[in-house]
Amino acid sequence: MRIAIAADHAGFRLKETLRAHVAAAGHEVIDLGTDSEDPVDYPDFAAAVGRAVARGEADRGIVVCGSGAGASIAATKIKGVRCATVHDVYTAHQAVEHDDLNVLALGARVIGPALAAEIVDAYLAARFSGEERHRRRLDKLARLDEDRA
Image (cartoon, rainbow, N blue to C red; front, side, top):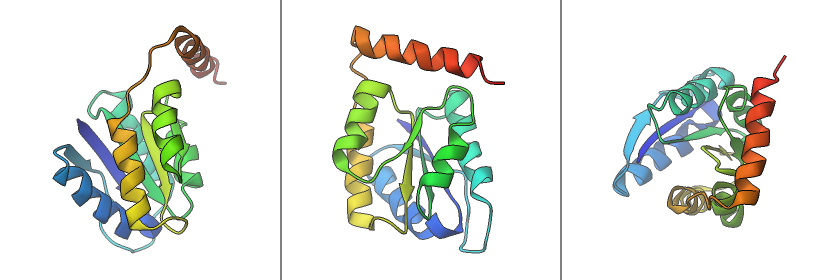
């Protein structure tokens, strides 16, 4: 899979760890920054990942900030992006299986690199179930995207 990844300054170190981890697992990594711990604004980087996923340039995305919350909010502003802040393995795979999660947000100040790698592995291994009830709910989410004011 092609995985877009980005972080703000607070998530830079974890992004670097995950970038290497995802590449070692055989995925193509599209690193959209940042490139240091110098202060930057998380919306710029989360939106870049969201746009890459929405345009089909990446199959899935990963965004990292201090808590995961801000990056998740920013990514979900991009039409077609379904992003959630995830800090456990169950939610990482369940959100893909039921909600077709296409961007994962992580908080570098909340979880450590070992757990983050486990979460990323579960996220990348999961597949959308395609069950009717989940497709119906995704259709409702798509309509919410269309209704944005």
